[in-house]
Image (tube, rainbow over all chains, first blue to last red; front, side, top):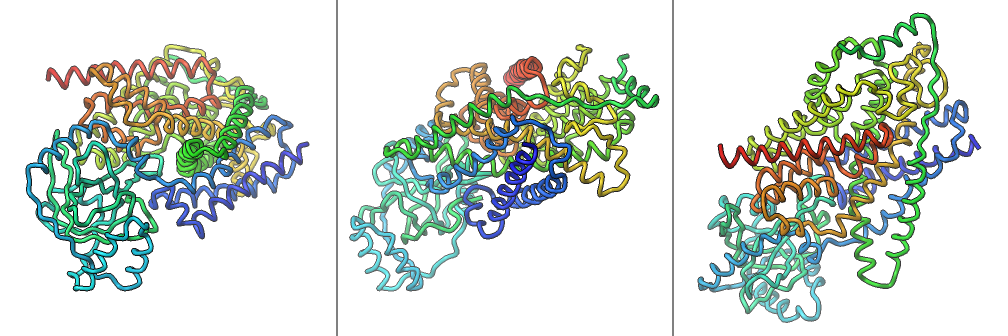
Length: 274
Length: 363
């Protein structure tokens, strides 16, 4: 019995050490899905500690161990997170989760934006980027059949020659410091979403910002004013370039972009922003 | 002036009287583990059901559960290792000389220790567990346990970033955290029988030379060689991890479940007045707290909706008293002690936040 308990302990430590070790080496992409990269060292340290526990347990053998069968449920508990890991990995934080993580107080803020945008006349001209052909192929692959018209228009404009591609700036920079980008052109990558509270022709373009782990992920977004001739489709990753402005409500600034160019792109390797 | 318990034990040790630590029983932990295993299995099976909503709900619970644990569990491992090293390498005499004879002074000192030894809330419980066994006065140990995750430079920095360098919020958070922790410690000073506040096994080992909770009956001081002492420290740390780890997993699971069931945006519609807003944010802190760093960003997201006192209540109470912490406390304290800690910190934080609200309106 003591030997069995000792083996169970060793197995617990070994499995967790291997799991954490895999996450910080070959599974870094999976780990980045859950945890801020600045905390990767924590999992590496945890793996090292577990290896030390395993060595201490193996050296001890069964000597001096407590005769406590009830320790078994505690060890089984420690395996439960591993069982839920595959389920967690397949979850996508999309716009349905976005709604639950946005404050409902934003409803009033968006109304202010709606009023302001309705008062403005905007001429929207969509120009395409000039990506390299490989990238173009991947963005076209992301289209659904319903996007064919938009895809065709983007492709026709690309043939005419496109303006230079600007470097992408983090969406968080635009969201947290909109006054620095006010009146300037910016290029960001984000995911589109609709919201019934927004005015017609306005979309959210968002990404999730994580502080420590994905459980605390908060959506950050800017508002897109789109033109009818190039409708942006919701739930698509886009690389958009346009002029930034912002609106202020209760001291909080929300950036607004009028896109000049748009390209559908595939989901980034690290979809979160940090 | 009340003397520390270890003074009496020190006399015993001088006389060559050896103590063997009894086994620490954990009946609530066993029962809780079995219930948790059942619930987890049911949820897992529910997630395999054909309906999309079932899969989505289980997915969100899994996501929160796994991500919080991938951050918290390694910190707890580090905390248990620190605790094991303290157990073997820090003598009871050293602890006694640091904290002094006076329990009240030790409380004030312990409240600021986090500035020098920043510890997150997941790691602090196993560390404090070992400090209590080592003979640190219980009020001081509890004060460090409550203030350590708040009164430290890392949390100060994350709060500053979340509130865009609003230093008032940073100092208020740290100051209120210190005050509540010290007040709770001083309240515990009024109760003389510390052995009745901690688990029976821990009470028997407090301040003793042979403080091996593993029941091996050995004396740590007999390990002369460094490798021998390290091996002993690892054994203690391993046992602490197995004792406390299950509570962390279970508490995290409950938190993940509640976060998936109750969206964040439901809370801001309930805040009709400052006193109610403070109360609701404090309840949210208990139910949904993640870690003291991430708390700052979650509280800051309510910046334009709820009063500052309500946000502060979330920031102060969360690292002291959340679901997973309360479960982890079961590995150290008796249930009545946990109830006392829960009530006292809740009431103290609430009263302090009302005062902050009053001062912000009238000053």
